[in-house]
Amino acid sequence: MGLDFSVVPSFAGALLLGALWTVLLTVVSAVLSFLGGIALAVIALYGPWAIRLPARFVAWLFMGTPLLLQLFLIYFGLVQIGIDLPAFVAGVIGLGLHYAVYNSELIQTAILAVDRGQMEAARTLGLSRPQALVRIVVPQAVRSVVPPIGNNMIALLKDSALVSVIGVAELTLAAQLAIGRTYRAFEFYAAAAVLYYVINLGMEAVLRRIERRIRLSR
Image 1 (spheres, rainbow, N blue to C red):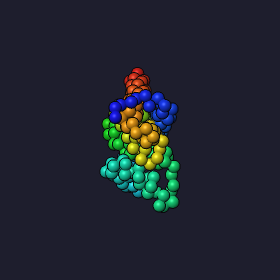
Image 2: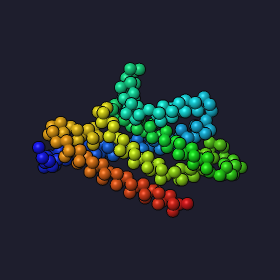
Image 3: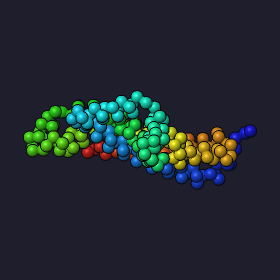
Image 4: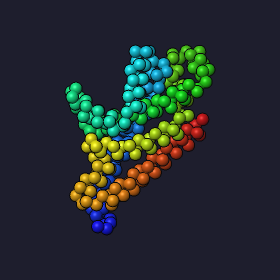
């Protein structure tokens, strides 16, 4: 049986809808991973031990186990203790927390690289320690790690395909459903790959623009 790409246009609407869900899933998860990374970094460096130890356990758990297993645990496992999350929410939490841990490692290193005199100067001006962190230290640290965090966001986009296994109607699942009706695996996986590449190009363009604005603001 030869290739027949003529079947793809009839499923274009479903594929594009799946692509939109992929973009939404990636953006929401990326925001969660960014904010969560900052929170975990600050807790790891400055939090009391009662909070720092659980945060370290979360980091160990998400860095030491596969993302797919984490998605299964969040979506299927939490139901057993009475927490029934929609598939999309479970996907966002799984992707967001997974990459928040990796972002946290980057941000911790960047915070430690900020001149200690910045904190001392802020305290001299009357800012409390939390205020100095929020207004002075963390913004400087975040600016320096935008490129590697951007790389993590690109990886997050690619890993978003894994949420298809818990039923999120993103691009990979849309392609699989089309394959189930047409038995044209190569054609639809190739179409999905093209759409992922287009989304990836869009993300890279946005990240380059953010990096450029940060460089100009220094």
